[in-house]
Image (cartoon, rainbow, N blue to C red; front, side, top):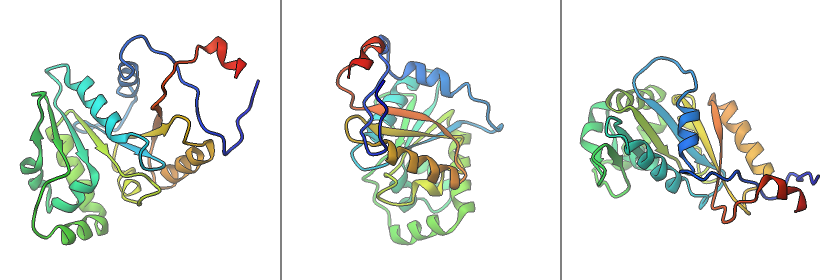
Length: 212
């Protein structure tokens, strides 16, 4: 059996004949958590291009396929640069083509974006208030976060959300990078729900993995 070195890339994946996100949804939303409104999850990667936006969109579409679910996907950088108070959020969220799915997406233009961003980063209570407001309005809140290698923005909210999903890019992300990201999330007070392997082009049966 071949053991990966720390710098080797992650390639193994489990095949799923159904939606690749359906099993994940049933698993993570059964995890016990503190009682509050909606379930809030941050989706993070170790490096740019791993596919956090794709994962957030796919999860929101799967959750939103049930009309009773109210879902919002949030671009973290956009939120940080636009929101001045929790009350602003109702004006920032826009409905997508799926009636039950909303979003706070890049492209929102507001005055004082730099000041808003500075306030967001400086005040933990401000971040908590905004996240709590979203959790009151929606059953599921999915944060699309910049990679850990780009900035520390994602680590600034991991202690305020229910859990974190870490996206690994097949044939690029290394075990060392994943381990480092796990440590950073843990040190910041976050709870890692699991790791998603993205951009895997071929499913390798379990019996055949030992051949590689």
